[in-house]
Length: 116
Image (tube, rainbow, N blue to C red; front, side, top):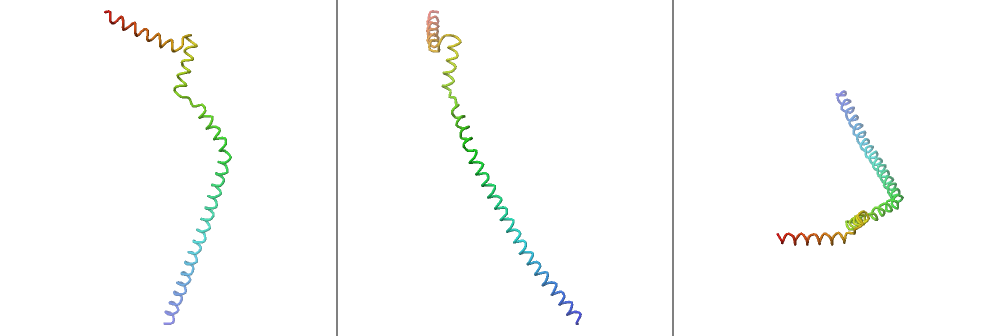
């Protein structure tokens, strides 16, 4: 019977030790997880602050580049005026004169069509 009691006491002692170790390991997991979360949060904060700082440095240059791009925006009317100017330089006739000539040709064509 003594052997049985010793065996039970030994098993109980092992169970208590295992329970304490398991509980201590759980606390350890909690402590490591908390430390890792804090480290990750600190790293994320530092990265974000670095991005804000870099963005603040680059912002004036980007605004200037965007401003240059918007200043160079060309409209359809701008292209029309430019093409008329080029056409006038090449032919020596401005677009108003071409429009008048085109209207006269249409009128003559209509007259000729009416006589047939």
